[in-house]
Image (cartoon, rainbow, N blue to C red):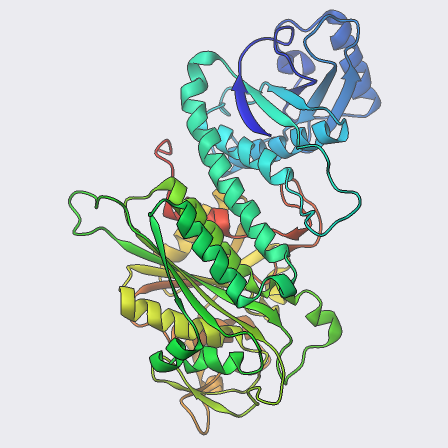
Length: 512
């Protein structure tokens, strides 16, 4: 499976399906490649009229090519929408959804391979950016999570997709295909982690995944793991307090990527840290969640999954700077020793926190991790990600994450990277006037505010645990799990925001 480059005409390319790209409202004469027999063109025109095909995103028309002496058995028109050629994000979106459409069509027809003709026109060229996005669309759409199925399991591999282009362009396009493969595979890896039930994805399982990433990196990534005895010595009282009700020990997992050589002109290069919330299951603690809210709590480690997916890709992309990935992992469960509302805990940073609500645990485990990473590694920037608040879902819906930062440039860069990745983000305010509601009568802070602005309170709490570093928080509570299929996004764990992080951290050399 995967995407390969090919060259040739409709009559010479060997494939089960030829998919011809048609942009919205484009004439069929303009879209069809050279060498299309008149009889085939007539069939396509007739079927397009019958189905009112306009070239809109996701549309397709299929005819059989039997008896035409072509190298293919089926020919299809696939809609690419109407991208804005002046916008890289729009061009990439069109190519990514086109890749998804082609893969799904080939899968529906149960063919082994497909050749895609005509990607790119005039001010919307077929370049490495388009090839990358197209590859992502194909591979993300081919994802399946069949680990626990005994029936309806996909027996055959997904169709292979050939992107047809002139041979002189293949070298440049291959760079896009290679990068798209890395980003899509990292996203699908994160989907696997988040889709796995909590019984098989405990904190120690996240540790095992981190160690496997390091093993596969060939020495580029190393791992440190701190369990309960070490965390107690370190003073990580917030993480340990959440862990009190669980039979499985907490894990603070730190992956460290170092380039083989530091870039010239910079002493040691920059350091960037990614920190993820790893609540492998969240009951809410003694402030118990209602059943409907608890059902999807295996996804509460999606921030940790995104960090691991990003680090897996970092090893392949080989940036010339230092990258830290940190996962703060525990279950939030219940037993006689569970932390109670009004209990006071001391954090790694030394601040004391009154536990006002045991279901506001994600910010606690992140707070110790943020403080530890800043003190130990002194990074230039930290980005944390977490399924932190239902309030963010209420504010922004199920497909948009909230970005919080008091660094305008960092926030803008993350949102711009998200647009290129087709992962939607929206900046929300860090309104410090709300801090008064988080002041405790008996400790330095409470872990909640009042009922209004809940996503802001979560971000403001985290802000108290970073000092001088450039910092951003991404609340991924909505888009971490997709409720329905949309192009390359499939129902279930989405892998958001892995590709945003990678587009921000390691932009390709071919981007100008």
